[in-house]
Length: 491
Picture 1 (cartoon, one colour):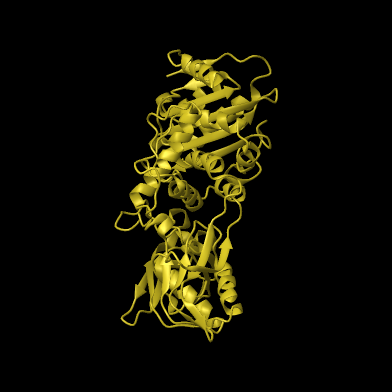
Picture 2 (tube, rainbow, N blue to C red; picture 1 turned 30 degrees about the vertical axis):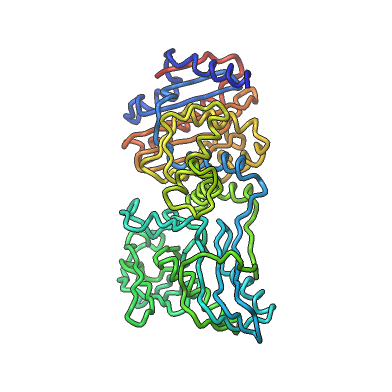
């Protein structure tokens, strides 16, 4: 503890100092017309501050916020944490009939898919159940109801896109429909996966002459239209090039409809019947386990979060932190958490972890833990403190393995191919319309690992300008360090 306090004091000691930004970074900022005040940066080599520019300023981190969620998730949930989906009932099974409701209980299972559901239903058939004489109950009590998207304006112009999916405790296929689109000169043919009971797909798209690779230019927001009989038709809008083949993934069917209609189709295909409606509810305390599916362990999912920057998975880990955190007032949570308390508990879990690692959480703002937010804020100093703690974590190998490798994979695969950082640095990226960010680990010219954080908050970051500034910072770190580097600190 004394050593941590000494480090924290040393870390704070450089705050009043001032020095110039590295020349390559300052030059790229000037060339792109971005003011130096738009950049927050921190570079640490061990306990040495190599560069600090506005490091204590809370800034929009975009997807680099996923580092906070995944690091704290690994440490608080543990590397063997797995989400779990269960089929439960307190009904008696007699002559092939389950006399009672069947509960599908969600447990933050990030791998729950059509195949997993089918295997669970097949397990019911193996137990001799062919008819469910009751309702299908969807239990989302772990994140209840986790519908923070309802009644809220879309984050951007693509609410149907996967990156905008807001998870709950019982999500299957991440609520996505895979659409295959194939056109000739005169018509377009559509296929949809998975198949859902009483759900069809259609289009009023106009065929146009144009490049197939630019088919998205004519895409307009699709919709799910329900008729009086309860049937749903997914309707695509816009234009589509002639003689073109393309595919897209969309989230337009209500999640209760999606799960209900997938369940009923799969159960029917296995020769089963169900007499009751589908409702939301909770598993009775005496409900017995009939079948289950578990996700992959957390380190594998963390890799799937950070390499491609998956918002939905990151939000699920964040909510999992909240669902397992004790109520700060009650000391426990015997009742299902409300949406507000789930997010509050997740926020508290992150702050408790940061404080335990001597990281000041002042100015930190968490909304969903993914960075897909106009509200979230974190300072380069806080992010740097988290990354420094990550180097000493028991799960440092798992955490570092989740980060994109410069010029090799993930969101860094096309960047800095001619830099010494290529193939060596591991960095998480972040991007919004007014944000370019990067955070992670860069070996310097002597092979010493440096913690690097850079955030540019400006409307001028578009067209790769913000990314160019951060690439200059990464390259500067990778080329420095063969001799002792002067500490550069500014505010």
